[in-house]
Image (cartoon, rainbow, N blue to C red; front, side):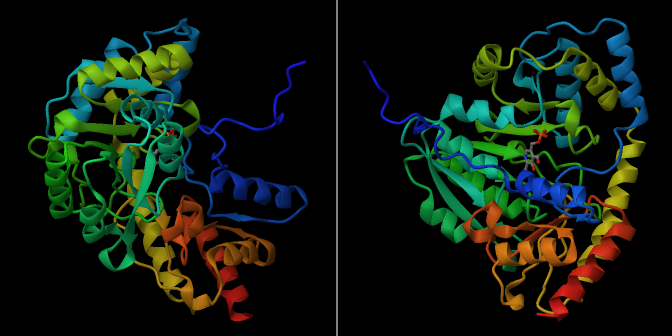
Length: 395
Ligand SMILES: Cc1ncc(COP(=O)(O)O)c(C=O)c1O
């Protein structure tokens, strides 16, 4: 009888996959909570605000009025139109509805364009420390992940010397993320112009993950590389509703890309997801068309929290923390603690009941840092900082 070599030997496409660090630590923190511990959560990458009331109402009404059917795989025409006009206006470029692909969260618009563009053996440049999905999807697509470090001394911008050294004729795609998870860094115009020239020189695609574009501080408006000359036709913008409108669980995101690629990504959606939930898309329509006041208030609150957490972290011996310009993550350098990032994250969870992520969960260049999400109240941030300081003073 035919026998498989080993029952649990999985394909090369998937054997490398690992859980995301945030879910792993969250699982451990929740277990401790069930055992009666009071945990301060700095590990979760989602706004702590409820989805804004007008959006919830639109979702409820959509369900009540029967918006519970399949939609076209790339999304409802009205929502593609609304996204094209809103996203285009915010970035200062023309975007057409046929260039918009709606998906359940931003993630499928990372994964499917990667599957559509990367051939076996193509090189893909990506930021490190960076969102773990980048490396996962590059490998599933058969590409070779090529890490470019984000350097603290450059406020976690791309290291352009290394980038120039690594880009070559085999580079198919360059992934950017600004503002960045996990560093909160924002890429400057000069950096983006440099990357744009190189992308055209080597004829590469660029995937610009702009999921935190609306969460930026002190009047900083993160620039999209798609707005630079010659770039829109080779860029995939990835954005969504999860962070901007506190809608992580609704699963609603989108990609903006040249129409032929959009049609290919739509085919991948057709054969995998089918379509994004109908009523969720109506909630998204209200998110875009309704008042933006709640977004502005949320961002102002994140800025207050950022200031509290950054100054608190800098007051802890062994920690040095830059002021992030966007997203809701602080990324302190913890080398002075004498521990690795994983050892320190473990110690803080066990001894201080504070859940943080080790920088190493975001790639090799994340070692020496922790990621703290400040999507938590000022009181909890203050209490968490007090506990961290306490534990570190006993080292
Ligand atoms: C950098 C980055 N990109 C994309 C996503 C995906 O967001 P979602 O699929 O929830 O829209 C996240 C979520 O944490 C993220 O941090």
